[in-house]
Image 1 (cartoon, rainbow, N blue to C red):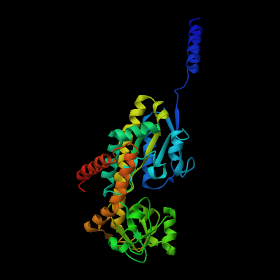
Image 2 (image 1 turned 90 degrees about the horizontal axis):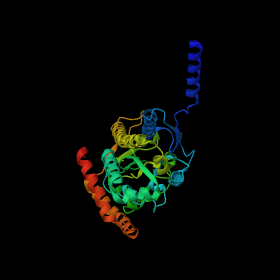
Image 3 (image 1 turned 120 degrees about the vertical axis):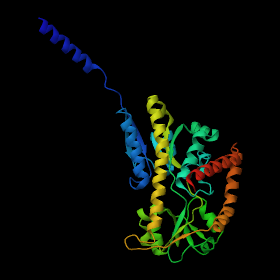
Image 4 (image 1 turned 180 degrees about the vertical axis):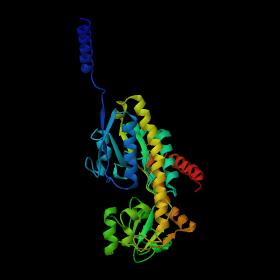
Length: 348
């Protein structure tokens, strides 16, 4: 009777245990307009993997690459309305009035170091009231930034050794840089990066904006003759964001973990980008697959001329900020001060 009664108790306990609900798992959708390849994608994947691992099964992240879930121009909209829970968003692909303050990172100001640039924009975005208010208004949470590095150039059929060499050249340029190079006689050609290879090969363009790792991954060394390290400004307002409702629905310890990992991978990604850019520039004169390319560097005098050509664009942005109720001049100064601080820390 004791055995039978014990068996009944054990069976009842097992039944109760089976009836308890399993620990809930939150499934988050990640959207990226880029393909799952290259340094940035590697570090994004590592970041998302780390979130899953540290959540101990509480969080699962579906990854949608190469615009499979949302196109680049709809990333912000899709993130805000919950089509994606986490997304890579670029200010330049978003409505200008929505990520306007965050777009300060795209202004053509001196920014020659990927690590310093990423640290400066991260600090600005996570501490400045104007950017905090912008994120709150949009219903998004900033997680990390991608710093691709200072804009460089690859050219074919005529080397770019100074700003004067822009004269007469057809240049693939993005953002405001076509206007800047136009001040020195260049003709801006608006084409996407994946088309740069064919455009250089056919003579549709003479030069293309690029970065060291891009020259390698897109094999632009096959169709270009020279590389120019401008080491001036960069396009930097690209980052990973999360839908506020999805973020608020997580356990507080998971929220803290995601934010802390974002800061960590903000630095790690920038360090990896800088390392690879430097490695590629060092290797170009030695050759990729037997193709050697000289590397030219703009002088300080060239950079001063670029600064002067860039100032009207910065002034126009400040004026637009004033119309939107922002102290644009103060925001630019805070950003450039942070850049200077982090550049000094990096020794650049």
